[in-house]
Length: 160
Image 1 (tube, rainbow, N blue to C red):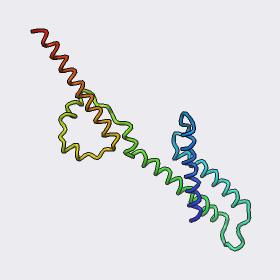
Image 2 (image 1 turned 90 degrees about the vertical axis):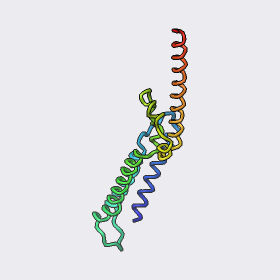
Image 3 (image 1 turned 135 degrees about the vertical axis):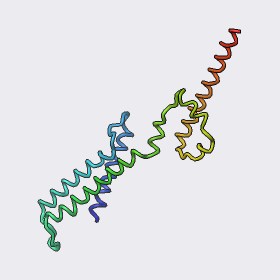
Image 4 (image 1 turned 45 degrees about the vertical axis):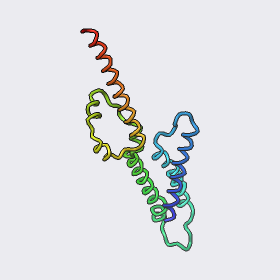
C-alpha cells in the first residue's frame, strides 16, 4: 500500500513540475502533462526494480523477488498509469476547457438566438466564460442587425 502512495507522490511531482516548467518558458514545452508526469514514475520504477533484483531481500520476509517486483513496482505503476489515462480522458470533457472554444454565431444562427425563450436560457447551465462570450456575440449580432436596417432604410429612402 505504501508503494502505491509513493508512486502517486512521484506522479504529482512530475505533473506539477511540468506545469512549473511550462510557466517558466515563453512557449509551453510540455503539451500533455498527464503523460509527461509518467516519465519520472517509470524512471523511479526502473531504479526501484533494479534495487530489488540486485540487493538481497530483508531476512525476516518470506517473499520472492518476483512477488516483490509485482507488489512494489508493477502493480503501483499500472495503477498510476491507469489513473493518468483516466484523468487525461476526463479532462477532455471538462466544461472549463469548452469555454475557451465557444463557436461564434453566423447570420444563419441569428434567428435561433433571437427566437430562444427566456425559459430555455434559464435551464442552461453554462460556465461564466461561455455566458459572457454568448452575450458578446448576441450584442454584436443585434448591433449588426441595426446597422443593416439603417443602411436598408437609407438606400430605400433615396429611391422614392
